[in-house]
Amino acid sequence: MANNFCVFLDAGHGGIGPDGNYTTAPGKQYQHQRGRFHQGNWFLEGVWNRALTRLVMSKLQHLGIPYYPVFHEYADWPLQYRVDLANWYHQNYRRGFFISNHANASGLGARGYEVYTSPGVTTSDRIANWHWEHTRALLGDSITMRADQSDGDYDKEARFFVLTKTVMPAILVEHLFFDQYEDALLLMDPEITDRFAEAQVRTIISYINSL
Ligand SMILES: [Zn+2]
Image (tube, rainbow, N blue to C red; front, side, top):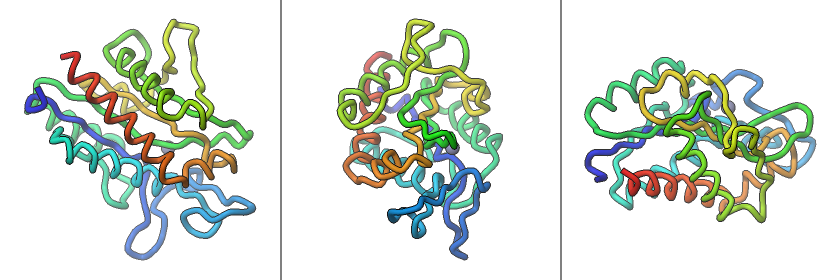
């Protein structure tokens, strides 16, 4: 089945360019009062999103599961271009799946992990629930799991561009709140990051096995 299947991987925002500058809007970083993150005490969301997504790519590579990255090494590509890449290449495959990786910020001290799908009941909701379960199994003892169960499933719903404009099932994952110190420390733990990546691979395999 894997030959007819491709995972489109998005790492949100931009990374650190060759000049050492973070190529992303100011809201996608946070300067903590203590601790060491990506640049001194600055946590850079786009850098973390890339580290996680590259781990997912490495695991998929080892497993021989086709994937295509729709993000640049450091440039903050427009969402329209990322979606265009996924939708165009998706024509080559019978089935596909789109994952956008992010970490959150609230300015209010919120903590925890959230999975988003577009509004309405779609295949994405089924996949989001698997992802929730895999993440809880791997990390439920370490992280806060935030859910909206008003509609009978775990995922939250939002009209995010990458969720509504992609032609294949799509989820957007907010991995904890990087502006909250305890969550930021968790995000810098290599085993935690690996478990987040592992959950994505297990979700992808769950979906492939359901086809
Ligand atoms: Zn983000």
